[in-house]
Image 1: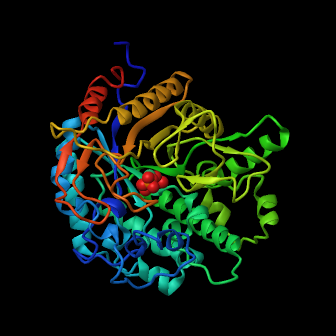
Image 2 (image 1 turned 30 degrees about the vertical axis):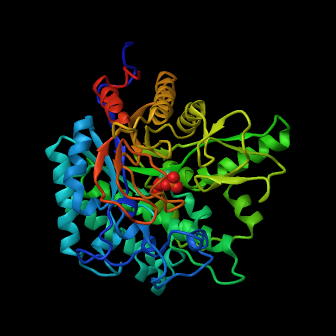
Length: 476
Ligand code: BG6
């Protein structure tokens, strides 16, 4: 076993999110949120994209988030399993509508505060540091219906009030915060990403970039407030990462890849550097977008984040000829199929070197510590005759990606930690399936909502335990 290249204080753990794990969608005074309206099945995509308006629940549809994996009632058992693996960090999110059921109240819901205090205390009991996302694909439905969600500037005040309430209520329990999960997904999946629903014939790019401006202001203000409430708070932005490769060395393909990267990095450029990047004017002009800004906005945006977090599942690929017909979405962002890499059962490319490339690019660009807060393989798992799950495919995926992260560290990139996605199986964000599993722990529930929700350790559970115990030196 070679010596570890990971720093001694490297944070190892896993990630879940309220919208895909908690369930209990109407308990504890929680209000309805966007995720509660997204069904499993044929309409899912149209609803997620904001093309089909869904403001009431339908009796003939199944909504996987309503039960999730019942983390709301089982968090003690789940956090104990994480502790058994040796986690030093656990990433989760707060459901905004659990604290503010409508979103525009002045006082937070006491039951919601009590629930998260219990969760974070449970983490503390096990020596696990919570890493908390304020907004992971859920917006209170009242804010969607009454205000049009992030298209409305009033959202900045609602969100910052919510953020302040969290920083104050959980002060001393949480010090690592993320503002918006995968903020760039707003462009690709507007309803699930930001609660946006479009009218027929509306200039969608205008709505999306205006909403982006509001989220960027809200994120910057939340960062400022977090530091005011407690100077020890550390706040990160969060990118759905994965660099674009040019399809060929044809200059037009290289330019296409650069533009595609910018589309995603646009958000992080602002959050990490504190101002809109130089290419903004032209980008918006070519899209026919005019941003409505108020005096003082540029000052607000200067409140940049302390660290840059990101998810990485796959690299991407672009050409000058890329269009709707020759590309498909892996983790929502459209890409050409790269013939040089393998793909998962769901068609997501598998490219560990792409992680090293992405990390180097991001550190070169931002010069801030990175935190890899999502990574993993969505795969079908089967129990063998002994009643065990031998998920060697998952171990192999994670091993290669952890090696790539170690290479990036040796390249000189500072990395704070690693939280693999869906450390306990949960509902898939893209498909609503349970059968697309990421976890070290199996959850007995199927795509139709049948099952006991019982937890079972997989082979990868014991593998990851060893990885953590050796601080990443033993990946065998
Ligand atoms: C990221 C999200 O996009 O990828 C998660 O932050 C999501 O919420 C994860 O679950 C994996 O995607 P999927 O569609 O396989 O669940």
